[in-house]
Length: 261
Image (cartoon, rainbow, N blue to C red; front, side, top):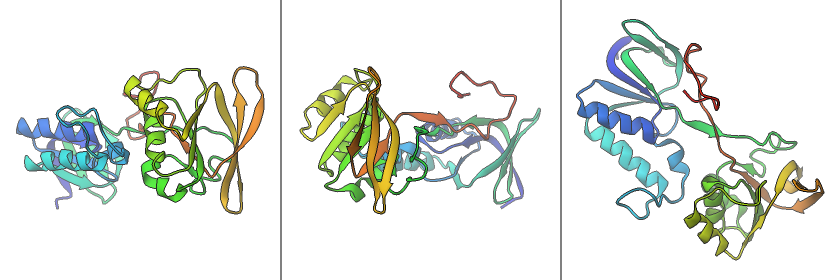
């Protein structure tokens, strides 16, 4: 491997967006490399089932990720599993530094780094992460089999988490701060049909508590009257959206109000 290589295009991030960009770039005969820190496919790997991919009624998130990856590789796209430690814009080339010491020079760079789960920032969340606090039902749901759990959120991701968990746990409380869900109507219809899922409207979590075995309860607050109550649970899944992974983005690049390029 050369210490410094020149590419037409460096794509930072190997999720659906990054791999799709790689497919189009290779079809345009651009020398392209995709840099991914973790597993190609990104957050899609964490989806139990994808039901809105045109042409396929249902497919597992991991399986669809593999199809994306195989498609990009079929055109000869180079995939490197590496951490990027520096990105320096330039006039002739943009310089991309990798953790293994490699330096990539690129005529163009696509930043497709996606996001990370947004945190609640309440007492007990960080302290009990991995001890009953989770951000991924597909990853951790098995460990909560036959327990009572809480899912926080009201969008598509939260409802999908609850639906997946409904096959494993005894009871699910979907805690949402408003009086209506933001999830798509098809997902809502499926959610309402599940006998072991109860929605707690106009409610927010304010603290997570644990004993020697892990998370044992969550303190909830009514957003209407401010009343608080404690709910006994065996685990809590947080699904309130994502924050952009933008630390690698150079300082002079413009962001929108949500932190995206």
